[in-house]
Amino acid sequence: MKRRLQKKYLILILGYSVLLLLIPYVLDNRSKTINDKHELQQQKCPDLEKTLALWSNVDRNNNATEMVGDAFNRSDKINIYVHATWRTGSSFLGELFNQHPDVFYLYEPMWNMWQSLYPGDAVSLQGAVRDMMNSLFRCDFSVLKLYAGTSNISTSFIFGWKTNKVICSQPLCNAYKKDEIGLVRGDVCDKCRPRDIKDLERECKKYRVMVIKDVRVLDLSVLVPLMRDPGLNLRIIQLFRDPRAVHNSRLKSKLALVKESVQVLRSKKQTDKFKRLLMPSNRSNRAENYVASAMELICDSWLNDMLLVENAPQWLKRNYIQIRYEDLVLYPVEELQRLFRFSNLTSFPKIEKFVVNMTRGERYSSEKPFVISSRDAKEAIFAWRERLNVEQINRVEAYCSEVMRRLGYQSVVDKT
Image (cartoon, rainbow, N blue to C red; front, side):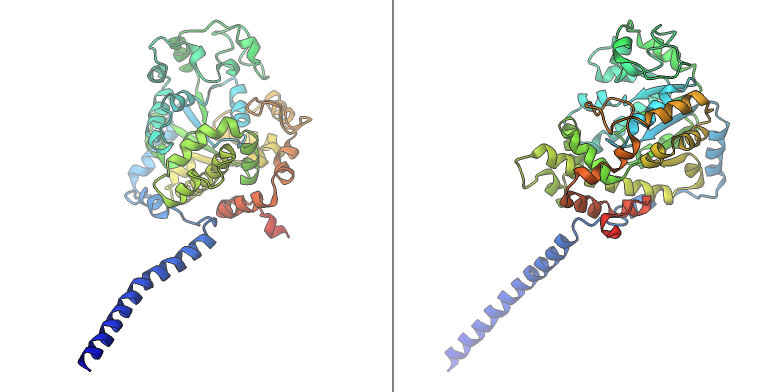
């Protein structure tokens, strides 16, 4: 009798122990199922605490903050950064500044750094990107020597130099005149003699507006220290585009973008979410998988930027403007005038005619997607409807849902 009772208690203890072990497993599975169901849905506030913390020590109404804004307004020279990501139409937007006779323009100068420091992930390179920008905006181009492998560099080291209006125009070269409006032909500028980088620095200092267009700042908060510096007078133009159109364009250029897409994805490799993106289950077409997966991170970065500006003090909001690619190409003259007012530049008929002609081309895209040319704006806006399948559209709309809502892009689901 006593032995049977001990056996009964032993069975009960074992059963209770097994039950305790099973409960966490069941709860974890249930949580994982729920998470998988909503995994693609974009969070409305992915990094809200980090975003708000940036301004936590700033009294938005105190004198120091207002003094920063006033210093910006008193400064003579204006620096503009065109903040964008790959395949949003940023090259076209940047070209509008390249054409203006009062602007010193640089096209993606951080490209050399990213190539030199590959395979460094995007986030670890943000500090270096900011430091380089800080030097360039002060017309100090010696920073480029760090990534050239030599201390003897010329204008031909500048990325995109063959289409740069300053480098290809008088006095650096006789191929063009800066006040003549029109695209610079690379084969014409290629005949220009390379000039010492010091010559370019001297030319830079003559201009009252400097514009840098790049796609390698992932987080607007990286630029806040530069915006605080009254000596820089930095203003930000952020370009957005329908995520579905961006995704379509990225897939078209996937082989050219795969390297930088991997750098973007590696910046979040410590999280489970981006381990999934960085190591796709479908290994047969890795280039397409990497380019598509990076789009998810891009939408998260966009949303973080929106939250940062939404909660920012007034001095930052006065020096920030956002523009949608769709508005730029559908209403080119109105948007051009708005951009130039923000940049303290004067618009004029020839450059307004230029922007209209650039959006009234015969085709959506040239055979070379990275070459600036006249495009059919309406076809460029809606090409994704014909080129993306239903699964691709649904996926982008899921993980970019909050960004689309804030920017006014209607989902296919909402239309049906």
